[in-house]
Length: 186
Image: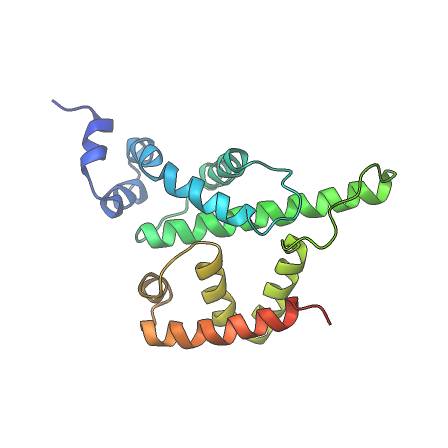
């Protein structure tokens, strides 16, 4: 008889998520190794927006996974929903980390300067722009979040949001324009 981990390796991710939602704890054990590389890629993508890389990619993946494991009662319809959830968790971890770091800088004397003229955007500026967009249109903000941080395609986003792919494309154009205006100096 095959071990539970071996059986999970043969199952599609969506089926493993369904088993996990039904209470099969062994299903999640088999899922994590299969999605780890994708989570690592998502974490790396999240960190690209960070000016000072103070939290490494692996630590970000592990913190997001710990948040998922501590929730316990979260269920996902498919892998797109799982990746959307995990990318959102990673973004929130980076924002919280940046806020703590900024608070520490205010309390301690400045020892080093950050590079001026960096092409990298401040994670807090991105978060503020995303909050402003959500205040204007929640769906546009969700499309932007799924595109930028979860690296989902238009068909995947349309599946997560329950709209057609053309609507996602239009929303993405509007969201990108709004965010660009918020993040452009001057």
